[in-house]
Structure formats: structure tokens, C-alpha cells
Image (cartoon, rainbow, N blue to C red; front, top):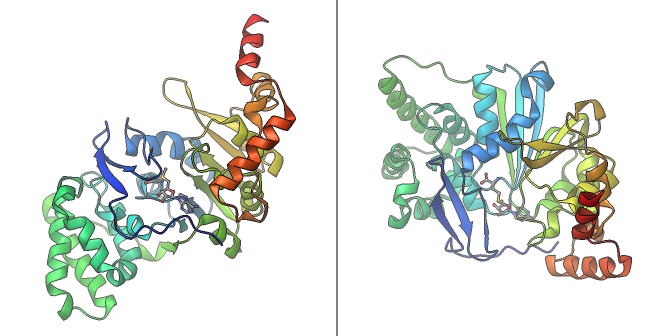
Length: 361
Ligand SMILES: C[S@@+](CC[C@H](N)C(=O)[O-])C[C@H]1O[C@@H](n2cnc3c(N)ncnc32)[C@H](O)[C@@H]1O
């Protein structure tokens, strides 16, 4: 399996503050943002969590399997944890993280994500579940968290916490004791601040597994069905690898009957690929009623805003030509070349002609 990812240092990304105060990233190599400039946290809540309609669709289930594809620094998982903690969901939650950049996943609990003041439990859960891997990769994690340019992007409390941990690490071995140590000072601090004893979330109800590889390889190795799938890859035109018909067919095999797959993409090519893979597909709207993503399920009753005649017509134009990735092993360049040749041969009406024609009629 070819992975396009072989960066040695972390200079390929920069931290940035987004408009809602949460920290996002910019990738210098792909030339793409990881998060909306309007707000990394807000984007996750609006585009990935709200459309799930969690209370109606999932609250009564005793167990949930969640697949977070392209976890990055974890906003979708964090927003999801925030939602279920707020709703006091009692079931067991298992989250599989597919992300080829290990560093991002391991620094994710420490980022200034604007959840710390209101929902410190989110990072508490993630630190607990990722602790072994953080410990095993502590040099790289520390380097990122302690780089002076990065200081303002890391939650100050976590910088102090991790420093304390670094200083005492030799006296806190094995890893299980490190976990206990972090847990103790973390809760000591939070409880003091809140001037009351905090009820800990039951860690045994949460389970996280990380797959640090190309998501196309990871998905093949998984033999689970998921109830919720977040797909948050870079834009299709830049990195088509996770938007192909072949990838959606693989996701379809891993979707439970009532699974909801959500993504920020409104692309006609992406929606067409989802339909070809077997999903029922609908639109996601933001607070201002602008379309801001796509939702898919095997169960058509779960799709609230179905694609209308106009949207379906758009799928038949050149904009609706989807990507193919036979064997899930081609490079982005190979996928884009095959795509543009096929698009040329199909010679379909352009989307702009279609839009004009529909305006006229
Ligand atoms: C748009 S960002 C996702 C942001 C993320 N959801 C967050 O909350 O921070 C895309 C992510 O996909 C990862 N990625 C891109 N291609 C991938 C692939 N083929 N397999 C696994 N991860 C990939 C990148 O490392 C990056 O973190």
C-alpha cells in the first residue's frame, strides 16, 4: 500500500486561531486548511454532530461504534464526546481513529480547542485512552507542545501538566502509573477550580483504537460495522484518495443498517459515488440554511433532507463524475489522471450549463 505520508518533522503544518477561538491547522504541503477559518470547533459541531440528531437516532442504543476517518487533532471526536457527555449517554462507545499522522492524534488532547473551560472531561477521556501511545512517542509530542512558536496554541494547563509529567517520568513507571499520576493531578486541579468534587466519566465505557496508516489500508483490516462515520479528508480535487467510489463501497460494507455517514463535502461527484456505492444520500444545512455537507445511510428513513430533482440532475453533469481507485492503492495523481480522461470521454453537459439551463426554465 502506498502512503503519501513520509514527513520527518512537524514543519509541514502551522497552528492558526480560527474565528471561534479554537485552534486549527494549515498544511503547507497539501496547501489546504484542516479546519474552517470560521471555527474548527463550530465546524465540527455544525457539520458533523448536529446532523446525527443523536438524541433521536442513537441515544437508546447500548453500544456505539464510531469511525473517525481523518481524525487530525480530533475535533469531530471531541464534539461527539461533548454531545454525549452533555446528554449523559450511558452506553459504551468505541471509537476507531483512522489518521496517518500519528503526531496530530497524540497532541490532540492538549490543543487549545476551547472545550477546556466547559468540558474538561473530553481531554481527560482522550488522555486516558491515548496515554500509552503518548508515552511511547513522548519526544515528538513534547517537541511540538513545547516549541515556543506553538505556545499560545496549547492549553496552558496542559503545558504545565505535561511538564510535570516529563520531570517525574522516571519515578512513574510502568505506563499504568503514568496514567494514574496524570489522572490525579488533572482531577485535583479541575476539582479545585470548580470548588467541588467532580464525578469522573466512566472510562471503562469508552474505548479508542488508533490506526496510523493510509485510511484505505486501515479500513480493509477492520471487520466491524459502524453506527457513525465521520469523513473529514482534504478537499476531493486536492486529495481524491478518500472520495472514490471504491472507498465508499468499502465504507458501505462497514456500515450498520442504521449507520449515518457525515461529511462536510457538497460535491456532486462525492454524492454520486455514495449513491453508486448503495447509500441513500441527503444534504446538511447550517444555521443560515446554506448547504454545508452531505449525510448518507443504508436506511432511507434516516435521511431528512433528501437530494431533490435539481441535485440529482447535477449528478448527471460533468460535475457528477466520481473518482475511481481500483484496488484502493493508486496515488492521487493516478486517480486524477484516470478521472480527467474518463470525464473527457463521457463529454457530459457542464455544471455551469446545467445551472444556467435550470435558471432559465
Ligand atoms: C481536513 S483534515 C481533518 C481535520 C480533523 N478532522 C480535525 O478535527 O482536526 C484531513 C486529515 O486527513 C489526514 N489524511 C489525509 N489523507 C489521509 C489518508 N489517506 N489516510 C489517513 N489520513 C489521511 C491528514 O493527516 C489530516 O489530518
